[in-house]
Length: 276
Image 1 (tube, rainbow, N blue to C red):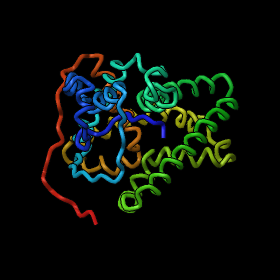
Image 2 (cartoon, rainbow, N blue to C red):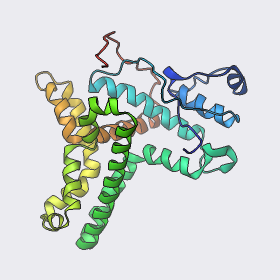
Image 3 (cartoon, rainbow, N blue to C red):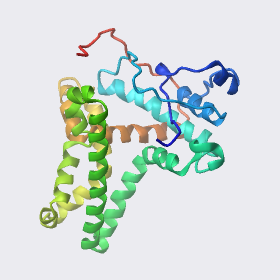
Image 4 (cartoon, helix red, strand yellow):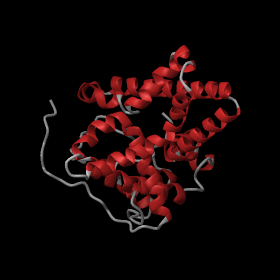
């Protein structure tokens, strides 16, 4: 819709010879996001990148939270590298639609999500100290926007892929986490929000960022013998979204530390599930 693509996954990316020649005849492997680098470079070279929604590619996904963490941490670090490498592209129309404001806003809304969550919590707590009623209005507006976005993304995804929706509707609905869904309900029922005691209201304010810490603890819990089986059900409580934000925050830290760029591949089992 925006006329630009952030990334065509490496496992399902086809390049025309002329497109490869246009970017120097080779794939840039200096980062952990060579597929995103290639997608960007092809577009910056004036070529068109097209998404084919009906392509089918078999891939094996991580089977546990630890495996998912390794995979997404690599992706997150790659996104940090992309953001820095193409810093002269953002918000510059001279780079075509890839440099457009709308594309950049979508990119940074995801890339900066951990920082935005912490900033939101800090701002709401500050407002609470200064004026409780104003903080309530800001909180209600913030979660109303959250609800609209959540409903739009979830329902539109269901409409686009009904087969996947039937298999994974629970994961989609609980993406924000059961606690966040409870907060959404509380904020949409105005009298209920007004009656919340101060300590519970502050918890809701802080949860925006505390959910990332909770997601990190769930990941650590998985590795503890005897209680690790609790990690998956707890992830429904904390939310898959906060887990992704936590991984993005970890990617910030890894890049600032200049950690070794290791290719953490997904552990393969060769098992094929029932796709019917």
